[in-house]
Length: 65
Image (cartoon, rainbow, N blue to C red; front, side, top):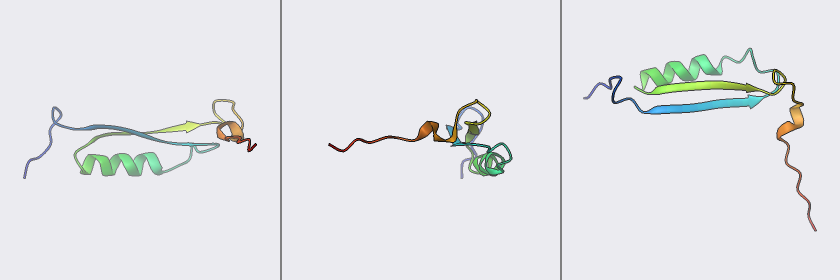
């Protein structure tokens, strides 16, 4: 079995998009699992409220003609 090192780790960037999500435990849980899997794993929160955007900022409007 090969143990990944800093030069062989695959980089992964993921995130959670939502409003008022700063208390989410997801980043810590996912990053810990990434380490255990030998990944350079980053999990970022993209909080709409913190950026001054409404929760509907990601809503898609479809027009059916």
